[in-house]
Length: 470
Image (cartoon, rainbow, N blue to C red):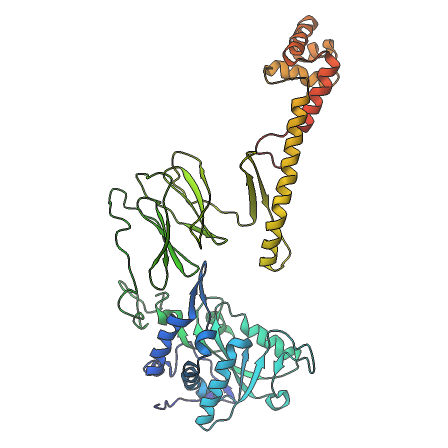
């Protein structure tokens, strides 16, 4: 491996701050090891759930990759003349050791400090593992495998403070940097120089480089990894009558997309193999011209045949499908905090929305809700059933009353006399008496007292479709 000569940049014992991608990095990019690791990031460190996720453990626990990463990281940081390397958690451990071994091969012995995710519960109960006394006051570089929001740096500083270890941290070196405004970019301008072996631009994740120009918006970033698609599928959409098509969703290692006949397809992300397809209720003139919603292991989408459908993302089984209108154009809105149960035989549905829950294990909460919600549904359904029985048992029927007759019933419930009702309504007492007689006949109530009692009970207890019980 060819050597790289770097400058120390030392003035009065301190290292001058330097921006990201400065110094030796352009030369390091010419190394075949750098290009090899760039491909390895794409192949082994990127995962798709309901969003893009990076996990470097599989990649950096392979000895060949770790050795290459260590040699490149040492070339990146050696001009800072570190005496100590410190890193947080399991992710930094392979880089700490491989970088230290690369330095040792270069004739430089480095001390290692490892910051635990949790304080050790026995023996010395430390946050920071290593020789504290020997490391005290020495010049250190912090290493980490990945940075997005920049939370690792304050974690390391808090751990050092808790264990009363004083280090002179002169730089932060990252294997992969998302280059976020509140992450490495802010740290590099206000706290420490940040050295990134790779950024998101290097794998083609985005092209917002400072020197990017149209049409490729590439700037000095390297070419995309691979020059041909890994797989493709033709024939999903042929008609140009409606050029707007479905937006694919990438989640759970799969690609979900609907064709112009509103058939939903699941493809394996790695190979493009079709796992299942779900046809629409009808075959509408347009396809699904909206974004599919991936939520809680399922796909939710509206269709131009008027249906709203939820499909199990793993199996393709339709969990439910409602025909709501003649057509649905908009992307459905999902309230993930809520859950519901629908009882098909009794045509009763309940919906529960859970908010401001304690920060407990999400899987435990889901399992609890799965057991609890049917019980809650049964309880509310029983209340509805009892109310329906109550209403059926009442001797009075109010369905045929006019607005004026209902107003008179309300005043009867309040205990008003015929004279008082006539005064309030601006009519004669004789008219009120005749109207009450007609009301008694319509409702089937035997007298004024029965009318007042039954009407009051029904007004108090009745709740209709869509009522929210809080």
